[in-house]
Amino acid sequence: IAPDRALSLQVHPDRERARTKFAEENEAGIPLDSPRRNYKDPNHKPEMLYALTTFQAMAGFRAPRRAAELLKGLGTDLSERLYAVLRAQPDAEGVAAAFASLLTERPSPQDVADLAQACAARLAEGSISPRVDENVVRLQEQYPGDPGVVAPLLLNPVTLQPGEAMFVPAGSVHAYMSGLGIEVMASSDNVLRAGLTAKPIDVPEMLACVDYVAAPPIRIAPEHIGEATQVFYSPVDDFELAITTVTEADGEVEIPGRSARIILGVAGEVTIRSGDDVARLAPGQAVLVRADDARPTASGNGTVAQADVP
Image 1 (tube, one colour):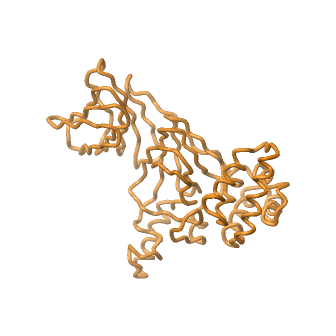
Image 2: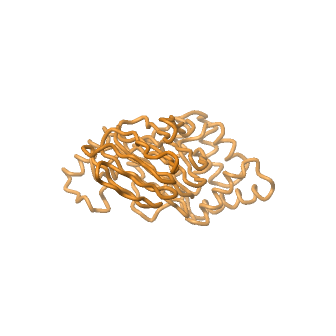
Image 3: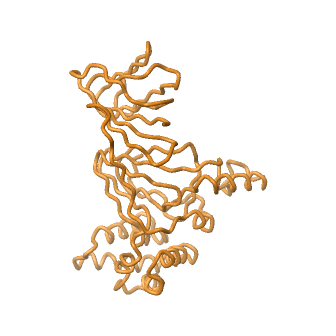
C-alpha cells in the first residue's frame, strides 16, 4: 500500500456483525456489486501494516482529555461544539458522542474550513501540537470541507519507521495517510467508510461497528526466528507476517510457516526454492507456495516478506 494522500476514514466489522449483516443484505436481495452493499462477505477484516518507509496514519481514539485539549481555544463554531461535548462527558461516551455528532450532523464545508484555518493559525504561532495541526491542514487541502478533516483532533497519530508494524483490529477507526508499506489482512472486503473519500459511505452502519475505547495504536514487536527471520504475530488466527533477510554467505535459509503462503520480494534479489520449483524475486514480485508444497527456502542478497495463515 502506498498512499500519496490520505485514504478513507474507515472501520471494519467484527466477525459476528459481518455474518449477521451479510445475511441480511443477501435476504434483502442487494447485489454484491451494488453501491448500496456494505457487506461483501461474512468475515471480519483485521489488518497489519508493516512499514517499508516512514508511514503516517491515524488509528483509534485519543484519551478524551487530550482530544479536549486540542479542541480548546481554536475558537470556531465546530471546535466549540465538539469541545462542549467532551467537557460535559470526559470519558469514552463523550468521545463517542463527539465523533458521532461530527459524522451525523455533517458540518458545513465552511465550518470545516474555519476549523482548519484555526489550526493553520495555531501552527504559525508555534503550536504545541504541530503534527496534529499539520494533519488537519493537509487533509483540508486534500478533501476540502470533509468532516474527516477534523479526525486528527480525535484520533491517535501513528508514525511507523521502516521495519515497524501495527495491528488494526475490528472496530478501530483508522486512516492511512502517507508512506509505503505491506498491508496484510483477513480474507474480507468489508469496509465501512465515513469520510475522506468519494466512495459510498454509510455513517450509521460505520458508527455501529466502532469500538469507542480510547487506547493507543497496537504496535507489534517482532520475534526473531533464527538469524535471518523476524515474525510479527498478529492477535488473530487469520495471518502472520515474516520478514527474512539473506546474504550470499547464508546459503539457503528456511522460511518458517505452516500453510499456504505468499512471499513478496522487498529488496535486492532473493531466490525462493520449494522442492524442484524455483523463483527469483525482485522487489514487487511475489510467489504463492501451497500448503502441500515443500517448505520454501530463501537465498541470495535481499529481503522477502511472507504472509501465511498460522
